[in-house]
Image (tube, rainbow over all chains, first blue to last red; front, side, top):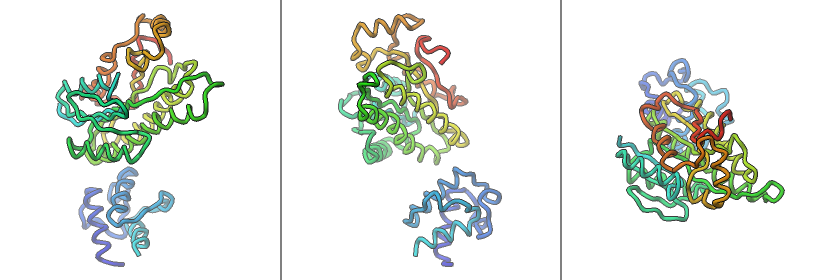
Length: 79
Length: 234
């Protein structure tokens, strides 16, 4: 996992979800740990698409509940 | 108030009256027009709401000149009247695309900045015919009814961000659009209205500015009839 990519990911999460950077760990759950609701997540994904220049279809977001899962999804697309 | 207000279809009729009213309240007003270039105390931006590019360009122009849109009034509308058997599919599709999908395009774009601001007002201008029906206006009535379901879905999606979404449903109003119906038909309309007359545009614009005011902060997903009693029970 590229630290540089994860840092950019974290930065987006901090600004969009208004959470402390320290809370953005691979294990963190969006809903329970970061208190993000479904609308927050949609906004977050849109911001990630912009930040990383990727496209994430709605379908691929199914079952994504943790920061690690979301990061892997984005990281795989930036290759 | 000094909010940024964007009104689609602001060159005439209800849209223009609404623009003037918001401007008189001290708001920063922008309107979109398609063909008729209006003049007044507001920023006028050309925009064909059937084109996403136009919508994006119009919002960018408004944001640059005035700031993010805080109040959206989706009012642009066209008619292609005709009895069902004579109505071409294109007449139906055009009305839906310009009016209902047009409302979708502008609402979606406006929502971006409203979500960030954690507040916003979206007001969709429908019509009494949406729920009452009107011979010769199956396409127009379908779009106006469609706005209600659209608005109520948005009200649920966006409520947690203090964004309200409401519908205003006017009855017959004295505008260029209704003048096209002819004196006789308008007089017949007025007879059906319990209040016995058609509305002035100011009677509609006043309800729109109310829905954008702090007094209306707890109203969302509502369909407000402004129809002289014509649609009672619908």
